[in-house]
Length: 625
Ligand code: ASP
Image (cartoon, rainbow, N blue to C red; front, top):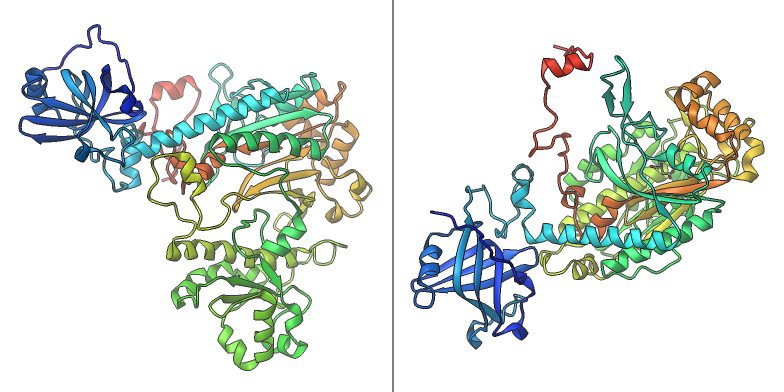
């Protein structure tokens, strides 16, 4: 059909904002045809823009020209409708639509553009295959749910910026083309054309620069920072992601917590959710004991220590290590898991890691009825609850770190708790699939605020938790040495510093994580601000002076120029939005995400490049055949 020009037509209103109070007004609306219904002399167009939908009536008598065009218009055509707002007849009122009391009696219709037929329409109720959605992302993003997600993302980001600014933080940009940073993931490298054979790295975080900004006296810095890590993708990971990154001078842990609690409160308030502060705190060891993970989901029952339920005879018969924890996990109201569900989860109980699954409660109940009853009692299990028990495998030993943790959990203990914790998290998913809890409700659309509150059956939706007192080092069995559990600029807790060399396992890091609903939202630390301590840490990590100089030399130099005590944190903005949007996946809150195979299906990246480009960059590609 022939298309019209916009001419000097100016939009006066947004579709979704019209109400009965506007009746009688002349309006000019512009947007996409969401649906079209042809009733002969009357054609109804649902006109959609980012605020919602309004119904336009093309009456063959009142607007013959518009009606004629209306016959040819198809969904997703772009049109301008000129007309008068009028109240609908009583029986035509649609209480489900915010604009359901009115309609626009058109006097003119301009068809501004037509469209090719996409494989799906934004007005489809059924959610499409994700690959198709990502390929036609421009159409997908028109869907009300996606529009909502990005409005929410905007509101949250704005609230965080405002709040941090009020708290005295300056937003300062740091370079994207830079040098490898210390987060420990793989770097994305960018070849330098002017320096043959040399590479920039994309930042895994602004870590070093933000610390330098503290040396430079900015006192409080933040940035909504894009970070790049070349890692394998999962539902809660992307190659590039956005962090709320901040750093401050002269803080204690508590100072950082206070700042974060304030901006998180503001961010959640922007989504209509009240987040009580301060957030609860738990030490790493305690979190492992109670939840078997360092990112606890407080919506599920915790683990229970049931060691006392077993006699030593029972333990010997069951072949579990009596020196290790025995923990029970209660799954509410699930009854028995199917055999398949149990088998599916078996790989979680990686026996090499030293954990063992007492998987057949019925058999236990037969041979050791008292122990079985006691376990159920300790775990607080009702009849309809399912209980599993995880214990240590006596056949498994970890040489280097078996006994080195006075007053702390050992690796073997941690492994038992972690196996139970993994199982707990996996079961939560199954539970969700079966019972609909933790599932996003389908009445997604109207309002992100209502959605975030209605996410999870019955329980309070959002459970933040600070985790503290992490071990400073982890023993890397393969490499046979202690490695930092965090980046190597993390300070040890001052009281533990004398043990750095003599007993590294006992040293706690002055760092903290923020977890929420089973996700790690972010982590941070108080940093090392003294050269002598930094050298000690490098030494205890087996990083030679030369190595340190090559990797972070400029930063070590900067440390010598009057560095104040400082610390900070970075929280995943995408994850925060994902939680508040009730989305199951980060891709729902990132406009142009990559797939789990690290591909941008719309832009078709990555791609090979021309010989000429490679030549300019002094690169030759040698593919393994
Ligand atoms: N740079 C750290 C990270 O991205 C956060 C921090 O220590 O502030 O995990």
